[in-house]
Image 1 (cartoon, rainbow, N blue to C red):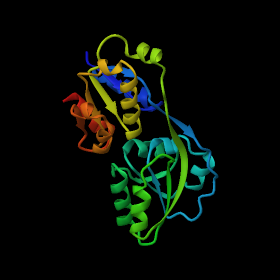
Image 2 (image 1 turned 45 degrees about the vertical axis):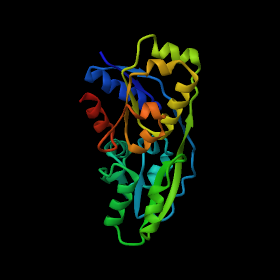
Image 3 (image 1 turned 180 degrees about the horizontal axis):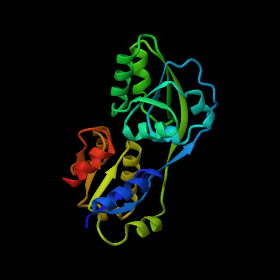
Image 4 (image 1 turned 120 degrees about the vertical axis):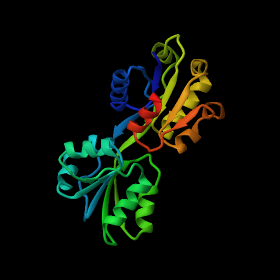
Length: 235
């Protein structure tokens, strides 16, 4: 049975692990980042459209913020984010973009300039979505819902999780996680356990963060979603 290292933060790590079990893999859960809520103010201002960049932006959003956005058209970056927004009572009209670039383009195509776009997002992010919206003539209003912090597991904790057997595959959902893994491989003997591993990355940008040796064994999903990443793992 192939052993697959899952590095994303909880609760996503456990959700991915459960999917791996159903697929016949042996998951190894070692989150290398953690999500921390920021408790933003409830004021959302004028809203024509809502953009949501992650399930975490829904999971950690104050109820008052979600209530203020109820009934507004929501564009989610992907299906899992869309599902989380629907479960929270929001009006999701589009969840097929896949990344921030496409999300901005889909909003621009659907709304007359200038649209007031409320963006539920994380503090650690690329500025692609807001930049593209501004360039197109829209007015993004960012509400930072959560922060992503690095985790530095102790050597003993890593050994307990990984065990003595080698790891066959690694799933990398973010550039932050890839950076943390690279640092971990440099400071511990986990590098020897991953020497023959294949690194499955959600995007080229994530693969680019890996060290040169690991990058040689990287495979990149053809679309930035976990569904596609797991399909790639299975092939």
